[in-house]
Length: 222
Image (cartoon, rainbow, N blue to C red; front, side):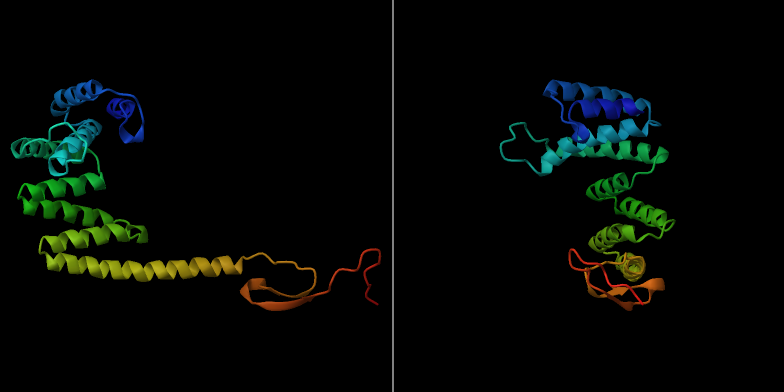
């Protein structure tokens, strides 16, 4: 399972650097294309293959200045899209990957398969329900955008409601953290004057006498 990730890292993928030549990349791509269809249970191979195919697929839509390699034709992009869809479907049958689901939904939309795209978004939404975490608010915002783009106002509105709930929860959690930090704030000692301490969370002013001058003894209580 880790072989393909390792080899992809060796050629510079996953921010691994590397000094791979175009021939090295083509060799890995060819190996993955031969292996992945025969081993649909290997989700890592399917996902690494799609990472490489995505570079080629995107090149057809966005051709960067200075890039001398020819962009794939629309017919070639359609073939790559079909291949990527199959790879994502195989991978997601064995492992969960949220970004892969978003990518698969996008490919379905480009393939005019909106019902299948909606199904992927709804699966993401269902999985989010198991962990009602404020850190997932951004994912709900992404879903709301996608639903609106697909004219599913009902689903987008449901996401808006969830986003509002998480925003309230987020503010409450922050207020609780701030209160706890304030409660446990250390007492600050100063050379003299009045300081504010918080025993049991209740602010209290305490007068602190100034230090005795050098060479003298501090006054003692009688």
